[in-house]
View 1: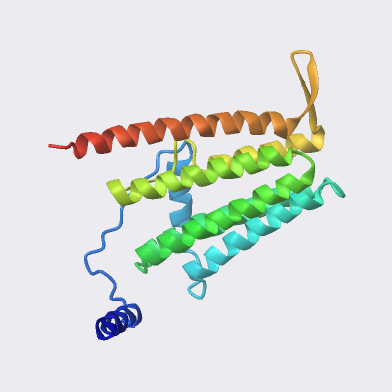
View 2 (view 1 turned 90 degrees about the vertical axis):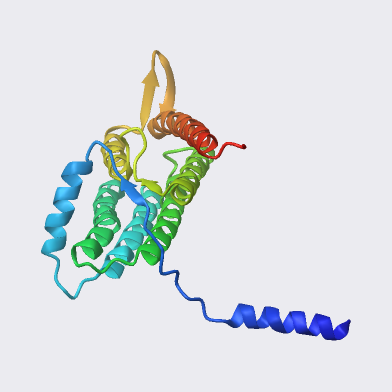
Length: 245
């Protein structure tokens, strides 16, 4: 009995320590990007990638993206002491777009794709970036912390849905309902300019309300509807494709 257990443990140890051989049959999922700015963004990114110095690679750009989003979150946290940090935040959003969007394009233009590494790292970085950004917003006083947390949860749920769809259907959707990360950055930049003008709004004679509470509530409702719709649509599609005989 003890010999059998020892043999099983030895086999398990060997399995755990054995080198992992990357699957040679790995096929990247089809990228589907139908946002409002998708075509213009693609053209711009290819133009930039063709002119990027050779000493800059996609890892450098990924690092720039996460650093910029960390600084964007810090700018929100600093805004109560100096509201012009909101303008600095717009600059960091632009840097985040550059790093987060150009890294993959640069790899494709140079034929240096690392599809598994790139997919994993890019989306883990996106998750931490969202945490930094919404954390800063929660500390800013421009939005109720509970609403900021709810928006973060909604973003992570949409991300999980997207990754599961990528695995099960080999389709990676970069946008939902014509909205993608770039559109969200643009809306956030516009919102920051509006915050500089006035962080308080009145609606139909009611208020005052914080501008970002109103915008955040609308955004949360939209993200929730998006999540329910896409989940139901994908579930129905997979059910049709894998019916029990």
